[in-house]
Amino acid sequence: MKNLALLIFASFFFSCTSKEEILQQQYSVEGMALYQTHCENCHQADGAGLRNLYPSIQKTQLSPEALACLMRYGKKGNGYMPANSKLQALDVAELVTYMREKWGNKKQVFPTDSAKMALQNCR
Image 1 (cartoon, one colour):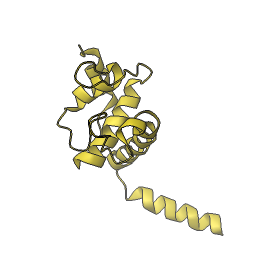
Image 2: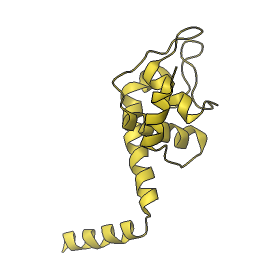
Image 3: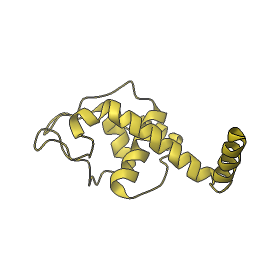
Image 4: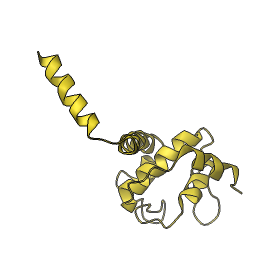
């Protein structure tokens, strides 16, 4: 009986959610996990960074494509961001989607195809 009630609730919940909303939620949740693993140590859970050592990403003006390149290839010069060549296009797409939702108030998926194209056009 309990399983039946759960099944009815789940089917009601998912029937009211569009494919785009489900994809957005999936990318955002996966992106949050990736952020916690790869970014949070330096940029902090709230994206505020650590003063002059690691910049805040809360109000970044970088485009999704520029963020993708930065995540994969890093940055040297005034401030240093290590490259993370292990991130695949899907990982980058999920990270960018999460960051834009969290700090940019944009609930919009950064598609994997767009991430692939951005990573091909870096440098």
